[in-house]
Image (cartoon, rainbow, N blue to C red):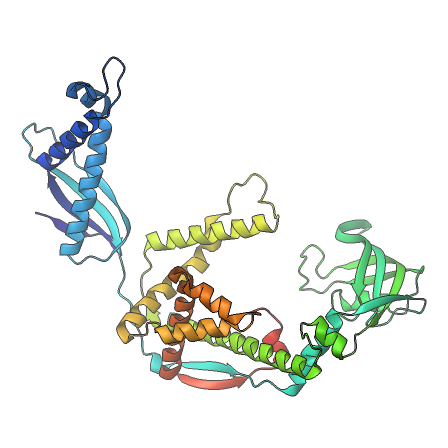
Length: 437
């Protein structure tokens, strides 16, 4: 007989038993199988006495057999009791002094998946961002591409916006140079917003060889907290002023950007196509975030600790790998990052995963083959040989998993959008494109 106890929250405990004879028979069978190949000093291969093998390997094999038996018994009990088990159970074998015992009693403590209770989503409102690409946006993007391919020539005139200058500077705070307050041969593009406005304004009008000192107050919300809101005295030495020259929008420029025949009309058409794909992608990301936030708001569920811990560990490991790629060092004396830094993000991800699984199954929002194919084909358009990219994805079904997940999420977004009260919100082009989505 078996029984299931409800512990705290999602935690359950299964009390069950397995026949002792089952473990004994399996242990004996494994030892006999081992005897045919076992090598023990003093005995010929395959001729080692059973008792010797039992003394040498019995405890280990007994433990392996017992663990296998526990896993099989638990799986059977979980299936018969229709338990949706999270993670791996913690087994506890109950010892007995009864030499005539025929059963091995055990308990298994585990978590189950929670009930996902979706509230009245039809009462919710959601902003849906929209944007229609214009010719001005294409022109703005081409202007940005021109700046990215600008050339610079040294000039004797005073520095002005658009110039690139090379400077040394040092800053004194309370009479001392502060961290980050000093640089040598720093190249700065004036007007690009890389430096604080007051600092750039001090450079404007200076010529090569000139030196200037000035006082500046850092903004109260400056990212470096040690200097935020404080006044410092800076000294700048300007070594060189370079005038910016933008390329003309001509055949040479078009070829530079990959248009082999130098057709400027083709260049503009390609820029528009790329922009339309990027605008579509960013709108989808923003609207997906809004839809997911709505689902989180209206859904009640308890998060299994096993899933939360695993997700937090995964996020921590990914962050550490990213830090390693960027050659960033760990905090002094630490081998890993504090897990609590990732708990909040992990809670959100786990909760959304459980919600999406429930919605997809309940409302049949699974990704359909034609949807996956359309997404892969659209993604491939940004490459030189789209057909090869599509073939590469379909040559290994595992490569389609990411595309399938994205389609599934998109289907959920459509379901949410149809269910809530939607208000369209037109975005500004610069706001949409300013940060990577």
